[in-house]
Image (cartoon, rainbow, N blue to C red; front, side):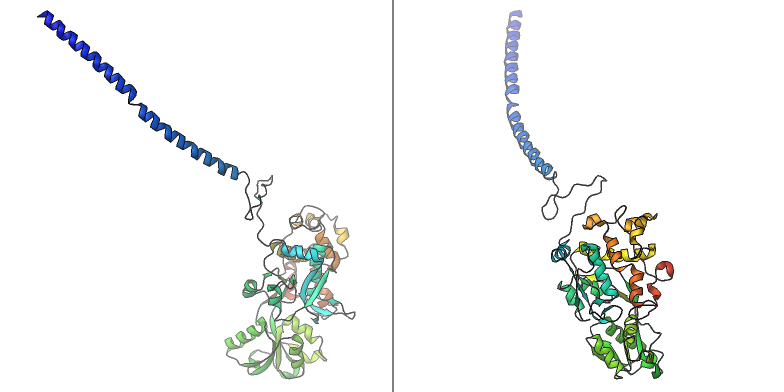
Amino acid sequence: MSRKLMSLFSLLVVLSMVLAACSSTATTEAPAAPTEAMTEPTEAMAEPTEAMAEPTEAMAEPTDSGGTPAAAAPAGGEAQASEPVGYGTIVQRVLDRGKVICGGRTDLAGFGYLDDAGRNIGFDIDLCRAVAAVLLGDPEAVEIVPVSAAERGPALQTGEVDLLSRNATWTSTREVQWGNFTWIMFFDGQGFIVPVDSGIDTIEQLDGATICVTSGTTTELNLADAFRQRGLTFTPVTFEDTASVYSTYEDGRCDAATSDKSQLAAVRSGFADPAAHKILDITISKEPLTPAVPAGDDKWFDIVRITMFGLINAEEYGVTQANVGDMMTSDNVEVRRLLGEEGDWGQADLGLAPDAMANAIKAVGNYGEIYDRYMGPEGDAFTLDRGLNNLWTNGGILYAPPLR
């Protein structure tokens, strides 16, 4: 019995050893396939690692929209804005040409007219000369191109002129269609001129009147609006050129003429008998007269606009054509900055000389001096109270951002 048990026990031991050996072989070989399978994902994952290396290299040199490497951020940590398309194109044309082409006029006393020597002068013309002094260092580096009222928009749209300084009213439609208007340099309003002996004092008394007006202007549109809103009627007599409007009125073929009040005052000063005509105490519109530039070159836009800022601020600070040299050592840091003796107001970014604004003031004076030269108490053309065009510190609304 024990021999049988021993035989059975020996058989079980042998079977156990065989099973163990088989199990060990299966366990050793079976994982081989997963091990190889896992090798492929490991290699596949290596490719994204390489792919990610390319954006890392691309990020090393940020580029602007034109593909040129963008400027590194300045030390202060502020990112430098990329320049828009067209930036500096008009500026470069002016520099290459050596002069500013300015759309103006030769027929309106005080604003744009010829002196006895045939030189084009006036409030608007001096603004052109100031810009030339700022960019080119020479106020005489200008070419004044006479443009009619109807030609103002096309002259800007086609780039025929670099700057339009021809008593043009800034409106939303003109901003969209014509170009970029810079800064209001003359606050005006539309009025009427009538013969003193007409007995007319109110707009209602013009009901049914014949009124001379320049075509292609906001003046023509405002006239129609004002009469329609009041239920009044009138007969317009339109001309494209200003001279024909007022010669027709002076000849008595119109009961009244209408335009910006500053223009009415300018034209009346040239009448055979100015005292025989009066400007009614009526204002039917806002007329913010503003120099404008063609759209597309923000650098040029900034140069022209900041020139206007400088002329206004110069009057506020008491910097004049006569004292600009002495004021360079002023105790007022804002004055020294304006004149380029300390700090910066954007000259470097615009490629201008540090004393660019000082050059403009030396050439034409500050805003008040320009105004008085032509329309002040001893003005060359006529006398017109500054009214709204006084500085904001002197009862007016004339105001400009600081240069800093």
